[in-house]
Image 1 (cartoon, helix red, strand yellow):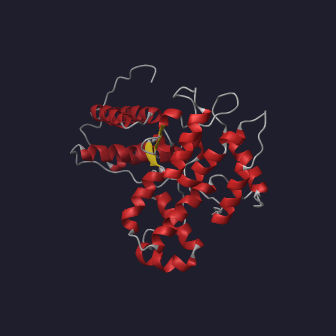
Image 2 (cartoon, one colour):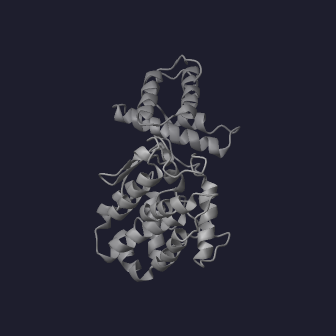
Image 3 (tube, one colour):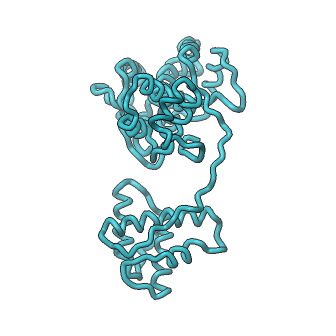
Length: 325
């Protein structure tokens, strides 16, 4: 906010504490602050008092006929989170808003799961790309494409990595400000740790710690479109057909998750214990993304369908939006 807002209602102190908590957690919460200011004015204007929220208050504030369902959805989420915050502070006369205006996301894309043989052909194409005066791709590409496949990272996350984010001694990569503004640690396999370490010693010998790990020839950050274009070229060299439906670079992420789940199921591992680790490793905001991969794994490998259904049929979704669209 450009000016300091003068809060009015009896809820104002709790609103300020709520905003402060969210920002300490790393959220910007600028648009949410504007909505809370509107709710503060609404609460005061209508003569409401005390630390309380009722269903009639919530419905009257959220469901303005002049607004779109998308605006209703934003207010539903905000007031729901605020109500839960109030309850945590010991206030009981609080109605928790229902989430009923969420947009229905329809994604017709069917993820492409790469086989081990296909990945061998892709990496052969990446490693064999000819040296050229006009590009540095023959030096860089063997690392980011292996990183994407071996960790399931999002492309944007990989391209934002700086030299200082790589821990060569402990083999841990730090991802800052990823999707949903979350930071996370990604342990790497020893072979990948060694490859990245050698890459930094050669390519970034004189680079500052704040240099992007994967640079363009002009020393800036490699662009998303560059990754996608090169990926299609490598698919062509590997004789893997590419259409408008894929494969996509993001399918490396799908392949990683499915590979992990298949390995765990066939090893009779306890998925209840392992799914939270997978969700944290991949940076899922909640378990919907991980549940999506359970369904995808079951659909792709009918031979392990019975094992998944027996133990996790109640958490395998039939469909719906996830953060993996």
